[in-house]
Length: 112
Length: 119
Image (tube, rainbow over all chains, first blue to last red; front, side, top):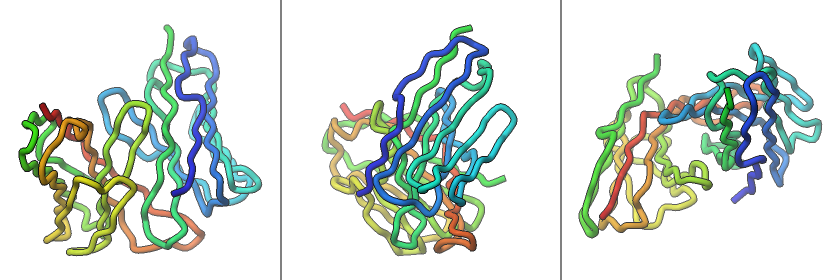
């Protein structure tokens, strides 16, 4: 199966600091999705990126798809306690079905 | 709102028991998925189904089987539970049957999860 490296595995930040997680694929992707899982909760879809070099924003969250469509990042500006959780990237497969391969996730904790 | 429900939030079973985990979605989605989630390993796909009675193995199918007799219901079966199957099990569903226009993939909607402990 395809390799999905997501770094870092854990990130502790002071409230108000920025946070970034990176997702790297060994293969070129048609798209990439991002999900957030709150502690004790289930993954919830955040966004999908499709175009090379695409940048999308959701309030303080900025999502970027690499030019070569092999990597992606999620950046949070001025973190808040509501940002706590684990962020997963999810990659499609190359066989035309709806399977996703999830990255190992980055767990964000906020120090108030 | 899409709703995906799972039969139990917590389940404790003994080694060797047959275990059924049920998942129901109410949005007429074609695709349904079973994942297990373990610390440091993310979500790993066990099986998925793209239509009634149709199934495909995921990355870790050993020790599991599935059943999809109705479109809205997808069951995960542990034929003989073992302690290494202690985990959080998540069900998900998604619409569609292939890439939609523009190269995207349908988002997945997850249930609340079942934390299974096998003793």
